[in-house]
Each structure stands twice: as structure tokens, then as C-alpha cells.
Length: 308
Image (cartoon, rainbow, N blue to C red):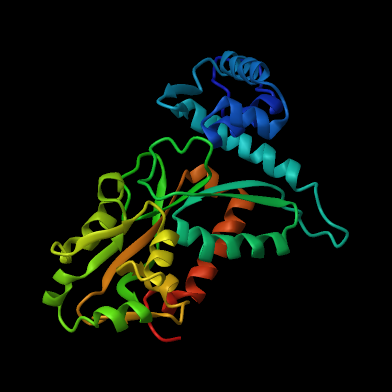
């Protein structure tokens, strides 16, 4: 194999390469051990044996896990070829390739519920042996992605040794419940907003710069109910806590919410997908990414707050 150093007479073990593949994708020995059904000690022993055969380090420790060295990335290409050959032997009764494995994705609350979950269900219909784990959180893209295959974040991420691409734009708008607007009146211009309370994120806990900037047009609005969870924003707005700065694709699902100042208040943000290049080459991950792209495409009008 090409990963073997010129001075070595031994070939790396296919089992050792598959262990490296699992560690390289997750960044953690524990996650790799769970995936492969072996213990942490065996993972360490396999990696040590591979490094002895190749004559160099394949992993380097970083904050929160492990990262591939240049030699490790070369060996990973060989490991992917081994995995592909093994998986090609798995086929259903009609001869079609069977995809299997776990795909772990992190995404914001709204994206997780209305885009990632339906995409996961579609993947499951087509490939019943794929399991999808969705971690709902609103944060910046991590630098290590330990234990995660895919991250969906708001705003263009600054990441290293990872692939990032724009999935879709989406809009935030100001909404009020019909009851709230009947009691307090409907704002007619931006200046009117000074007398209304705002439902949005907790400013001191917000990690995403683009979401922080989104509310900069309403500096005079006083805070009402705030939360780290966008579903709380929606329900607090429906309960007449104030005007909510909400994703249109979530708020427009509720007939009791009315968008106000639509021409003046339209904040356009973007969802980005982040993953390691080697992770995106896994067939089960590629199948999920394809399903995400299809779901985003189908929902593009709703994401932008346009009639559909």
C-alpha cells in the first residue's frame, strides 16, 4: 500500500487501518471504540502497531481529541479503500449496496427540527441501517469536531482542516401574536419599536456573531422573555410576551402570529455545513448530506419568508 514507508518491509494491517479511520473521523479514541465495539486499550494498541509499521506518527493530540498527521492522512486514504472494499460485499437481495452506520450531526434548534429531522427520516426510508443522531445547539463551529460528523452553523465559519459550504439563506422577521397586537397596537415604523418589548436570545450567552448582530436594528427595544432556544422565542411570542425576532420558516407555521414591519425588518442570515473532508467521503454521511441539500432546496421559499 502507498501508506507504507519506503524503508519498511511490512504492510499495515487492514484492521489497524480501520481503527485509524474510526479515530480520524471522530477525533476520539472513546468514540472509535464504541463504533468498532472494542475497548480503548485495543484502539491504543492498534494505533501504536500502525505507527511502528509506517515508521512515524499518524495522530497528534489536540485540545479535546486527536488529529491526523500528514502520514495519518496518507494512511487514511488506504483505510478508506479497505472500508470501501469491505462494504461493497454487503448488498441486499437485489444486489444494491447496503449503507449502514451512525451519522452524528449538530445543528441549531430550528434547523434540527424542520430540516435535519425530515432529512434523517428520508435517509432512514432509503437506508434503514443508517442511524442519525441530532444534537440541537446554537454555537460556533468547533475546531476539533470530536464525536461529530457534521455541524450546521449560522454564519460563515472559520475552521481549519475542514470543508465548509453554504447550505441556504434564511430570514428573521418581527412577529407579534394577534392578541398582543390588539392590546398594544401594531408598530407602523421603526421608531415605534422603542415602546415594545423584544423576545430574542439571551445576549450575554449568545455565541454566534451573526445572531448577535441581527438585533442591532432594535437597540431601543427593551428585553422581555429571552432564551437560548428559538422554540422558546416562538412560544413566548405566541403567548404575547412581546414582539419576537423569529426565523420566518418557524413563525409562519403559526396562524396566530402576524409579521410586522416586513419591509423594514428583514434580517438575512445563512446556514453553513462543516465537516472533515474524509467524513464527507463516507457513503452514509454523503447520503445524509444529499438529503439535507434536497430538504433545504424544497424549503427555500419558506426559509426566506416568501409565499409558497
